[in-house]
Length: 94
Image 1: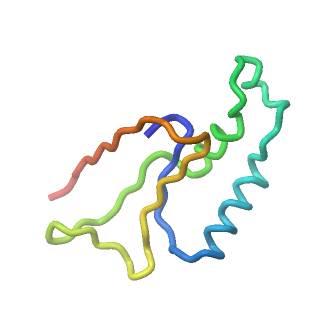
Image 2: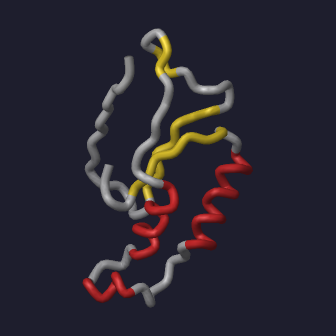
């Protein structure tokens, strides 16, 4: 992960994905007036979108396999272009 990416679990349906994108853009639009841009960066909206989506998910594993619902998928969202990333998996439980 990096600071302007997020991960979430939801339904893989084209209209819903477009709705999520529109919702994020409404709540955190591209806007040159973000104070963060004073640092020379121009990705203030990407940071805000990451806060809305979050950076981690908890998913069930049963008998060694992901135990998601029939329509659930894990989504990785990039809000500021492609960057190097790493994936960390942590297993907790009995």
